[in-house]
Length: 460
Image 1 (tube, helix red, strand yellow):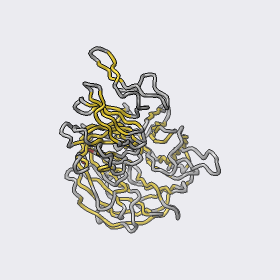
Image 2 (image 1 turned 135 degrees about the vertical axis):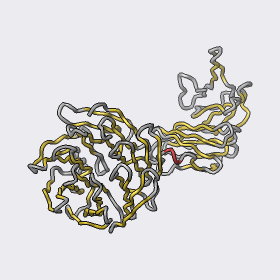
Image 3 (image 1 turned 120 degrees about the vertical axis):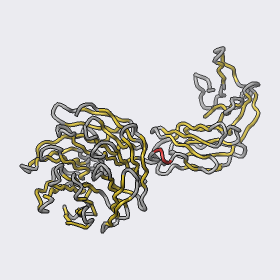
Image 4 (image 1 turned 90 degrees about the vertical axis):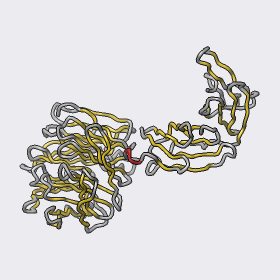
C-alpha cells in the first residue's frame, strides 16, 4: 500500500491504493478525500486491516470493504524508521533512527514500554520490526546489520548469547588459529570457534573488560577498568588466575610469545609481570604522558610502547635496557606491531585534529629497523585517519605486508601496504579493529554493528 506513485504535494489529498497481484489491478481506498499525505502505512498480521499514519493519527481500513473502521489520535514519533503491529492490532512497535524500540497502545496513543538496546543508541537505526504470530516475541533489525530478538511482555532480549549487543572494538586470534576473542564497548568478551564461526563462551568480569590478548592457544588474558588482569581457560570459560594492577584501569596488555611475561599499560608506565610467580618483574616509562599501545617482538626479546604524543620506545626484555626512542610523526601512537620475521616494528599514528580551521595531518604507518635504529619506510594512509580513537595494525606472517584500518568520510578503509602488495577494502560500516589468522589467509574484523567478519584474503 502506498500513496500515488507520482507522489502528493503538501496540502494535496492523498490517494491510497491497494494492488491486487492476481489481477494486476489497483483499488483506491475510500477516505472521502479528507486526508492529506500518509507518512507510514501497512497491514496488520492477519491481512484483514490496513493502517495509515498521518498528521491526524492512525486510520484503519477493512481491506475487504475498503472502508475506514477506526481512527486513533496516536501519532508516530518524528524519528520513526520502522514499525510493526502486534497480531491483535492493539499495540504497535516503533523503531527510531537512534536505535530505540518503543511499544505503543494504538487505542489511546500512549507509550507502554521503551526498549533501548544497551550500547546501541546512536549506532544503528531500526529499519525493520516483526512480531511472531502469538505476539510474544519481537524481532528487530537495524541498518548496521544487527538482529535482536525481544520478549514483548518482559521487554528483555532473548538472544544475549548470540554475540555482541554493542559495537565490537577489539579482536585477537589465538596462536593456533582455532579461537577468536572479541571485546565490545560494554566490556563483554566473546570467544568464537574460527571454524564454523560458532560462539563458544561469553566472558563477563566484575568490571568492564578493556583489553584482551592470547598468551597461548589455551588461555585468554583480559584487563579491566578495575585494574585487574585475569587469565581465563578458553575451553571452560573459567578464570584461573588474576592479579591486581596498581592503577584504576588496564588500558592495554600483551603477552610474550612464550607466555613467560605479561606487559600491561598503567597510565604512563608499562608493568612487566612474570607469569611463573605472578609478580611484577619491572616497570618502564616512555614519558610522562599516557601510553596507548604495547607489543612484544616475535622472539620475545624486545618490548615496545607508544604514547599519546607519538613517542615510541623499545627495550630489551632480558636486561631492561632501552634500545631506542623515536618520534616519527606528530600524532598519537595508536597501534604497534613487530614483524614476525626480522627486526622491524610498525607504528600506526593517527590524524591530528584540525587546529583553527586547518586540514590537520593524515594518519601514517612508519616502519623502523631495530638493527640500524633508523626509519625504513613510511606509508601514508589514504584516509582521514582515526583521530584519537583506537586503531589496529597487523603484519602478515611473512613480514612482507602490513594491514591497517582508517576512516574516509562515511566509509572504513582497510589498507594493505607492502612491495607490490598494496590493496584496499572499503566497508560502509565502522571497522574498529582487525587481526590476521596465523596462516595469513583470513582477516578478522571487529565491527561497529557488533558483528565479526572473517574475510578470505588468499595467500599471504
